[in-house]
Image (cartoon, rainbow, N blue to C red; front, side, top):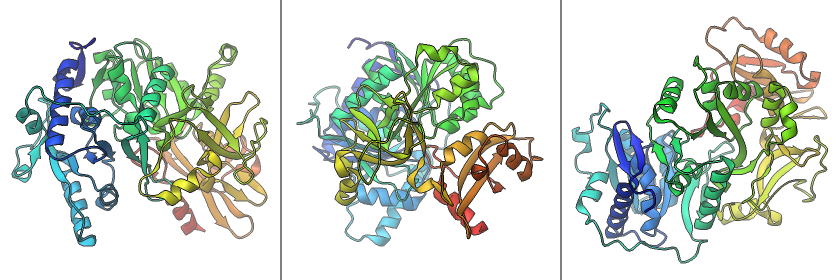
Length: 523
């Protein structure tokens, strides 16, 4: 092993080398085989960004299984629905989420008499610095992750190679912004190619140090799990974090890379921290980050890579290609430019913006709206046990994202909204992203979300939900509206402003459906 003695994992004061991590994964894989896992069997996992969840992304495929990490930011009903769909043979559960798992399994018991329950394996705390009640009576009677390693011999595992690179390696769940989360099936080929894409897009060098602010359950950690291993890197595993922790960890461990959705960027940008002593690469995805957040992030010493993608492509689908001529722009204009979603990355076959009815490409004019569509080997194989939605998603030979975008003269795409989120006000179509971008530039605004509010005359009007920064509570709705009036066409200016906390999914995406219900109640 080239990097065998290099540190693979740091978790508090716990450290493993790559030799140790490989042996641990082999032992877990062997234990899974002894527990009945074979080709194609699903192994689910419910836990935060801990070493065990990292290892399962190797051990499960080594045993011939399919790994399915579940979001820890769900209620028992949501977890129950996912477990019922998966019919996993084994469920690994972190001790902090055992109650959630038990409640989910109880829900299944009440609604499904013939459900074959998974064997539950408990992942106890391994960070020596952590204060935990891991020896509590409520944990007795469960097989533990540590016991799988302790009881297995040091050798003897025959790693199960996939018969085809198109065989599934993982099932991840969508964020549920447009309804119930769907199980997205990804192949070994897709995981491999997306891993290579991440290495290239993020300019990851040999032996990187990756700080785990991206949830490992989200698109297999955007494939950074496998990318860090491929380069002999070090993983800084963490349960929770705040802005100070991020800055302290970066300096302490000489972090080279991290990632996160827009809420993570906002957390960093709004922190009262000094610029970093060295440059750090950070990737973001999901909703486009506001220009002022991009500006502040880079001012603090981060180099931002903005990618657009989704669960159906294991994270990144596009990347914005930086050109030398952009260096002549003002810093503010550079920040706004970086929020554009760009072009398909080199390992994604194609991205296009099409009229979803005619399947014709929209002109490169920067204002004609169409639906973003992808095609390539990094796109999902389909939705698990859902052939109808799979067929609809791939109508016409392209994957339909449901996102509305324009295509600029240089070919770059810029996402304006979800299909469901587009506001139709009279004869005008309003992209909520444009309005939110202006709201974010107001000095008092911390978070913002825009939806359509039902209106008898126009059909819908713009309704803005705003969370103010601490100490800015005196800011009123009239001030916000007037601020937007100077920066937007009149028909795009919010007619209603509501100050409230905003609801987000477990992957940091704004729950527009919840906001639409709130707006509807105001009508």
